Length: 222
Length: 222
Image (cartoon, rainbow over all chains, first blue to last red; front, side):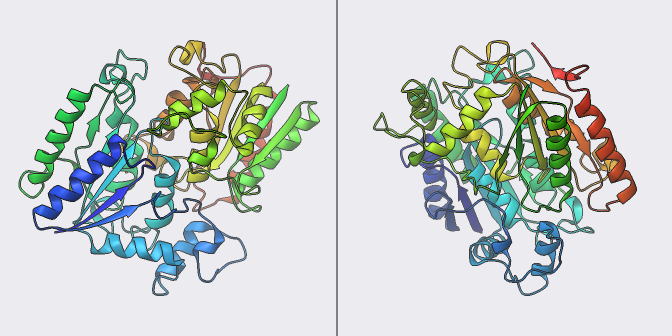
C-alpha cells in the first residue's frame, strides 16, 4: 500500500516523533511505500491566503470558491498545496501524528486540513461522507495527550473523551471527505510521562500497524 | 470595559468582517475601550516554535515547559506573543470573530490559542477552570458557518450542533483558562447567503452587544 504519514511535532526526541518513527519503520519493513510530510521540517505554512492560488476568479475573495475553481484548472494551487494533494491522491492510507493542543490539532496541522483538503479535490457540494472524493482511502489519527485518561471521562475535568474532542476532525473533516476512519490511537499522560507505559504503548502501536491490512478497526466506514 | 476583538478573516468584505465591524462600532459608541487583533492584517504567525522564547531551558525541548519558564521571567516570549498576552490581561471581555473551517477555528486563530494562552499566564497545573488564571474575564465566540442550521442537527449530515463542534474551544480552552464563556453567536448558511437574513443577523448581533453588560448569557460560568 501507499502510506502517507503527516507528522506535526517540532521536537525529534518527542514521543510523537517516536510514534511517527515506529510507523515509518514498521510499515516500510512490511513492504509498504511510506511517504512522510514532516510539517515543521518543511516549514509548512498553515495560513490560508490569496497566494494559495495561481489566479483569482472573483471580486469578492472567497477561499472555498477559489479552491473549487483551482481544482478545475489542473490544480492551480501554490506548489506546496499541489505537493500535498498529490501525496493524498496517491495514498491508500494516511496516518496523522500529532500532540493534542487545546483539545485539537496544533495550528500547523489544522492549516494542512484547511489548505490541502480543498473543495474540488476532497469534497464538493455533491460529494461528502459516503460520496466524498477520497472515498475508499483510509485515515487514522495517532495523538499524544498531556493529561491522564481519567481527566477525559465523564467525571473528569474535561467532561468528554479525547475521541469526542476529536469529533470535528474524525467525523467533521476526515469522514466528510469520504475516508474510512480508523479508531484513534491515543497515548495519555505525557505530562507525567511514565516511561514503562510509554514503551508499552509504542509496542502496542507496532502491533496495530503490523495488522493494518488485516483487522483495521473503523469508527466511520462507508 | 476593555474589550478585545480577535478577528480572523482575510477578506474585508466578508460577513465575518461585517460582524467584527459591527462589534467595533457598537461597543466603541457605548463607551467601551475597544482593541482589535486583526490576525491576517498583522500577518500573525500561528506556528509554535523555538523562536517563541527569548531563551530555552532544557535539552529536551517541550513547548509547555518553555511557556511556563518564560512566564516566570517577566514574559520572556517573542514580542508578538507578549503583545497579545498584554491585550488579554488588560481585557475584561474578549470576542472572537471567525469563520468555521472544518468545524473548528481556522489555523491562524488556532495558533493564537496555542501561542498566546500560555502555561503560566492563562493556566498551570494548579489553575484551570474555576481557578484558571483568567478567571473573572468574559470570552465569547462569534462564528459564521457555510452550511444551514438543519445540517447541524441530530438528523443532519454533521450529526452534531455547531456548539458541540466548538466544545474543544468553548470548554476545553476558554473555560479551561477560567473565562466565563458567552453563548456563541452563530450565523448559518453563508454558502447560500440569503442577504435579508444576514442583515437580520447583524441587527441581532448589535442588540446582543448593546446588552453585553446587562444580560449576558453564559454557557460556562464560575
